[in-house]
Length: 451
Image (cartoon, rainbow, N blue to C red; front, side, top):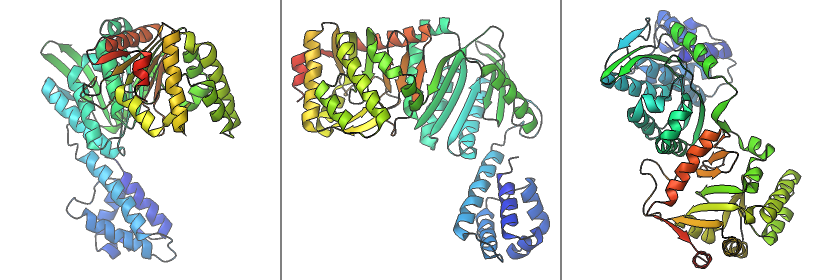
């Protein structure tokens, strides 16, 4: 059993200078119950827990020399109690014993649904999943359906580490790209790490350090897996799983905005001769020199000034002459013209109407002067996907693919891959978007009509 509540009790006893017997007398409970709550052997019941917590909070706040807020103590104890209660309520075989066994797919996914839900409570609206196999392929749509449910349960953060066989993935690129983009779009923060699968790797799955599963057999309707939530087992296998997944050669990994700026990823992308760009926000590219100069002079941050100067040179010399396919939602163009909101280098700008007009006109001019620069719009009446909102922005060049969940503010949710087959996979997916009935190529004149 988890001991969040017991550890909190111990902390407040120490801070207030009270003994267990003092607390027992104040709340009118036997000292044996207090001891069991502290060591994690028991918890206050669901029926009496709220009343007990309020009395405890008053006791700690009223203690001689105590410098504690009754409300803050109550909130802290309540949060710890609810976490432990949720862990206890998992109520599955293997919680306090050794390994348990399941040989039915439906029973397995019912078990995983319960574990995911309860883990989100125990781990404060977040969930961490580590798998030494391809969970997206092996566990299929049922696993993805479980992931899709999590945001509606209030889970804001997901960390997924998994393996993938890239030879298989390229052959089924639409499934992988769609699923990965859905997961990034569906959470306030997602950190997805993928490594290359190797032969004979054990099929282990860890949900945080709380739950361990090993798939023993899957073939047609046949299914077998062992699992446990016993602490001595989960801690052991969490270490093994981490060792397998801790490799430097990652196929896809989370990247912070600071690292992207330091490594000039965006500058390199705009310098590439071949670019595929999907923006789910105003297009932060090909701003005319006059607008770039105004932005440079308008900031006192020297580092950002230098970044904008470099970006201006890249737009001048490379981007306008490159082979570029740019996809935007039709509403993105309209919203940009109306609001003037633009994020450039992960810095938000409020553009003036004349600056926006100059930007759109310059994009139109690039369309006229460079036959390899093409602009496509997606009609919002028919979304690419129905499961989650608009997908993250996708930037693909000859050296990397970058996924940016720019709908989340601040823009801190980036993923990047420099693995050739991963780039190929997303490039194929991008080119498929252009073939959709709701994707239309615009001429320069049609773009200007938005103004």
